[in-house]
Each structure stands twice: as C-alpha cells, then as structure tokens.
Amino acid sequence: MFKLNIIESIATATLDRPPVNAIDYDWVNTLNAALDQVEKTPAVSVLHLRSSSRIFCAGADLALMQRLVSTPEGCDEMVELIRKVQRALDRLEGIGVVTVAELGGAALGGGFELALACDLRVASKKAKLGLPEAGLGLIPGAGGTQRLTRICGENIARRIILGAEVVDGEQAAGLGMVQWAIDPDNIADWTAELVGRLGRLPRQAIAAGKRCIAAAYTSPADGYEMELRETRALYGDPDSRERVHAFLEKSVSK
Image 1: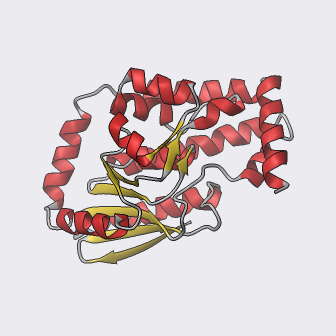
Image 2: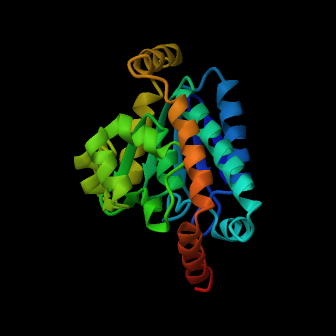
Image 3: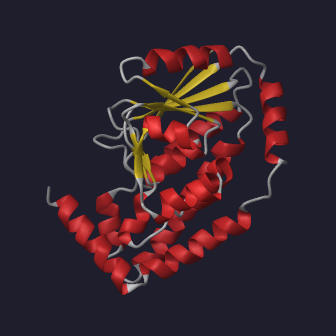
C-alpha cells in the first residue's frame, strides 16, 4: 500500500506491501487517497513514487487472482478491479504535479503500468521491467497497451506486449520505456536530487505543461474500454484460464 509523506513541495508515496507490493483493493484505495492529499496541498509540485523494498511492484495479488479465476463470476469482479486501477492510474497521469517513478527493482505487469502513468521513470540498470501478461494468455489491461504505445511507439509496444518480453533497466532506457537507467547503488540519491530540482518548479507551470502535452495526442478512452472488453473475453477463454491456474498453483505453492 502507499504511505504518503509531504515535506514542503515534495510528496513521497512509498509502496509498502511486502513482499512484492502486489495490487489489490487496498492498493488502489491508498493510491487514490494519496492523490487526494496531493491534489488538496497546493504547495506540492512533485510526487515521487518509490518502494520500501527491493521490488517496486510485481503486479496483481496472486491470492486474489486465484480466488477470482476459480469461478466464472470472478471474471466480472476482476474486470471491475482492473477498471478501478485504470481510473486511479488515469488520475495519476493527469494530476497537476510532475510525477516520478523510482524503479529500484522489478516493475512488472500492473507495477510497470503504474510507472507508465508517471511523467518520469528512473530505473536501476538491473531492474526487470515489462508487461508479460501474454504469457498467461492475458493482456496488460490497466492502461498498458495504451500508454506503452503512446510513449514508445507501436513497434516497441508490439515487441514488449506481444512478446511478453521482460528487459532490464538499461535496455528499457534504450527502448524509451524509461528516461534514465542508473547504477543500482546510486539510484536513490540520483532520484532524490532529481526530485529536489523538480520540487523547485512552480506547480501551475507544471500543470499547464502537462495539459498541453496531453493535448498533443488523442484521448485513449476507447482503448481503455477495449482493454476491459478483451480482458473479460480472455478470462472466459479455457486456455487462458488454464495458463493462469497453472501459474498461480506454481507460484502460490512456493
């Protein structure tokens, strides 16, 4: 879950749900609560997202997924949870401060979708990053297909999403998935320096700049709805369900 700390112009939201900061309802609720607080604190001009552990966020909560895929009715609940995540990440993307994701470790699936919703991404050169859902017969349905395509272009999005490819931070920087790849031992200090510099910028200028940048591309609303429709269909597909069950049984039994 997200723990928010505000000092002057800098808000720091720390993911703190050991061991892998997995996404569940509380995760979404605490992200929304953090955004509420930032929105009503005019002095804040930068939101820094980081993790208290080695892993940034490994994606969906496996125990929750296991419960939801066990029954046909669970598909509806899963789609609604993904919709909640979509909406929270849309808020994060549009919030009127500059947002920085510090990826000191793995950011996979929904965890990387969280990072993609941020304005800036700083990754450890050794961090594992990607949207590997196709390996389970699924798609990154919380905005991943839309944002990665906008950020990196169609060719890179097809490579990463359709190939279920996971790359390290250095490769990710080369592909445009993150803006910076930093040595693991230096990433915390380097990001803190970046955040400090951004914290000296006026919020109104940042908000205006973000609105203008957003106006340069088409609204992704239809793409988000398509993600939800495809997710619903994939959860009903026998092969996808078999792949997810096999993955969960293997992972949960470890």
